[in-house]
Length: 247
Ligand SMILES: NC(=O)c1ccc[n+]([C@@H]2O[C@H](COP(=O)([O-])OP(=O)(O)OC[C@H]3O[C@@H](n4cnc5c(N)ncnc54)[C@H](OP(=O)(O)O)[C@@H]3O)[C@@H](O)[C@H]2O)c1
Image 1 (cartoon, helix red, strand yellow):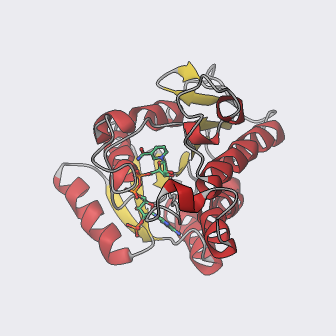
Image 2: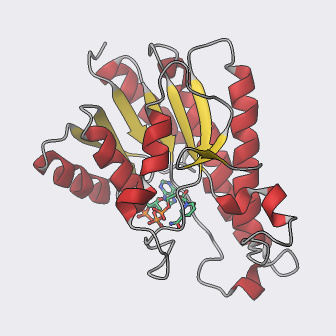
């Protein structure tokens, strides 16, 4: 079994996932840079290696059951355990459209399905596959990269800043991911494993666009903190920069 801590970050070839890998790597953690396109993952891992980080690329499309099984097998044979899982890979299949074309009244079944395949089903199935390896860690940590747009409390509050941002597929997929966090934390409550949802902030990435106010290094901070929680840290919560968000 690896003496070092080992972290798997999905969708880590770019954006916030890449930066999470970097910040965990800077703490001496071995980072598995998972990417659906292995060449992109290898380029990202090489960048981190050049910075002195112990980074390895792994091919993982979170919607692909074969990739998921191979990932669990690979981690088992190479490291014998997993300490941290960050379910970061995420899409908004309606991203290219205006918000008016992606409401509950207009969304297409294809886009609704595609968004759920990655944001919910992918996260749940990757987690199930690597859970036996997280049980082998002394202090397993699971972070589900959610969004404030998954908060039903804020969506139903006319005074909240997200009240008018109603992208049904993406938002509800993150609400469902939050439900996954709560159910999983309950299922693991008698183990050392902690499971939390993170909202990174509105971050300048391909998804967040240049209009976002937050830089990527800050956008990674919430997930990195939850991935490295101490034994007395919370489980089954929803956080942004140390603050609890309403479900
Ligand atoms: N940016 C924001 O403002 C913001 C706000 C709230 C929440 N978030 C969440 O934070 C996470 C990261 O977002 P980001 O802004 O960094 O987005 P991004 O720059 O678009 O990066 C998304 C990453 O997910 C990967 N991905 C997509 N589908 C995948 C699949 N089926 N299997 C494996 N990887 C897949 C992408 O791979 P490819 O390069 O191959 O496409 C990419 O590496 C997402 O879950 C997002 O919902 C972001």
